[in-house]
Image (cartoon, rainbow, N blue to C red; front, side):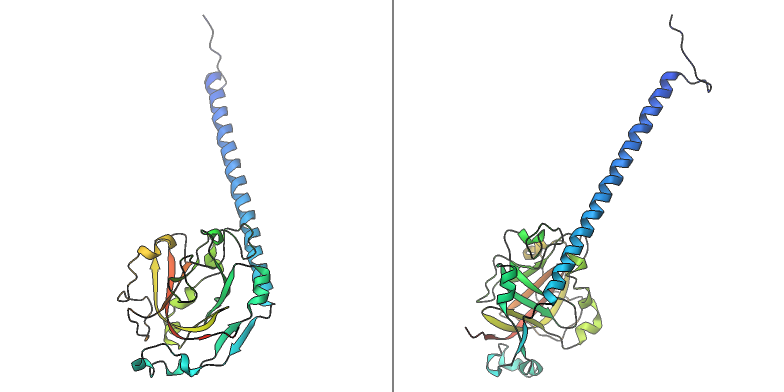
Length: 266
């Protein structure tokens, strides 16, 4: 008969070996998780720094100009012109597209939202390519501001802009628009493309679950906005929607109606 060996605590040597083995496996898993999170953090810092450098680069590029207002291009209903009389006198924002196209040939225009830091060139979508690529087309989970591929810049149909990358909320945030005081100001959205300059008036801010479900969500004109606006809106108005990441599970949508536009000189 084989004689069982015991240690000082009275446990068999076999049990002790099993316990040591479990401890080693647990330690290995812990080190692996720490290594994985360290790599993820380093990657995040690198991608964040890249987007910061791109924005600094863009801020040093001279491409923003003012274009005098044209009273003949007001597109609101004649009965509403008194309501939007202040916008008739506002200058347009006009962007020189050439320096932006040198940086990225997919650039389609520039958007600026008054009263916020939201001011970026936007690109045309390539099957959500810019959801995880930067403005300089490098792999980056923060992504960039991109136009829905169904959008038509000539007619302004299906005008939806997305900034829905993994950490896009840190750079493309619209959280400022949730302030009641922001909604009470007479703020506008400026848009400039190679064809037109245009002015838009916000009328609604909403939360949705995911950007991919935007067209399926009930964002009707009757839905109550998170922030009250005095802007009236009708079914035949031309609408711009900006869908941005608010958190890991929520998107924030700002909607605005077209007030006026002008064709750019060729």
